[in-house]
Length: 323
Image 1 (spheres, rainbow, N blue to C red):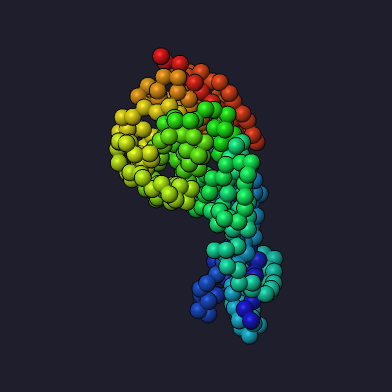
Image 2 (cartoon, rainbow, N blue to C red; image 1 turned 120 degrees about the horizontal axis):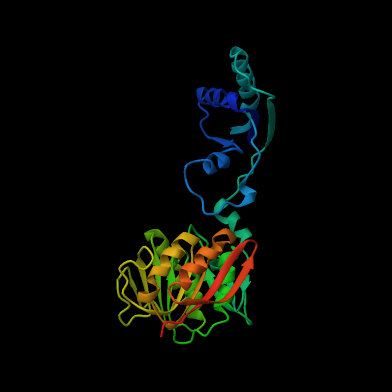
């Protein structure tokens, strides 16, 4: 039977324990270091937003976990203790050994337990594997395969965008989903009556996921262009682009669930890419950047029509007044 052998040791001693495991030919180890996230946040990278729940107090203890056959546990512990005795100058701190059964979890299936349908205005966001399992009579289902791309309906900014989207008239409107991620906003806009949608994202792999989600929702309508620069007469296109760079097309509605800095940059595209009396729904804004975003859009002729706040995140609805 497989077991998990856990050793909690000081940060100084951790490298020596790992080295001892390696000398036994045991190389499949898991290292739990609570300070890893603090090291990342303390790097030179600029973070627009950091969830407070990620911040943890510094700890000098690191946990090292090895996966061994039960018959190997005793001799492995004995070997590790002998190795530690040899290195008398190393401060291992308070060493804690523990053993428990290894549970072989199929993580490809296990993570699905945590995704449930989420209601957002007129839309209910449904994991793709539940497509045929439930009937959503009172809501419009949007099926999303939660992958690497942002936009599953779980985050406040996505939910607020969908709620705002549910309040506007979309019938026959053309839409651009800027920084589309999973494609959740553009797909929802089409399901709410939009006639055309252009999905824009800077990442090629992300666009592939958006396209896959589109196909899941519109299996009978695969009439789209991929990575082309014009909508032509097609309903949908997927374009690898930094915001609207190289896109000479105007839309009735712009959707942008990104962050403050790219939203401010997006304000420079309003004249060329938003039709008069068009609407902009945006989110990914935190309070300290709120005024900067509002001023940027107001300078380009947009008026703030509605604003919603949830757990520190802000979503906004703008009207373009340039007639």
